[in-house]
Image (cartoon, rainbow, N blue to C red; front, side, top):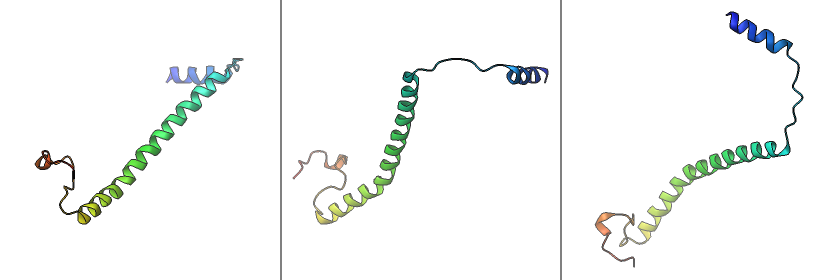
Length: 82
């Protein structure tokens, strides 16, 4: 408890630092934030597009009943794509 009180007291009476943060730091911060946001959007888009992709595959399988629904199916590994 004494350590926390001392830390709060020192933080309250300390003077602000006169430090310069250059533009490179801001650009680095923005690029990091941009990377996380773009990654999040791509993951979200992939998750949302997955059912649509599945539906498209099912519709194509109904249109062409002779073709395999999944091209990675081991039962159709020897067949050539027609």
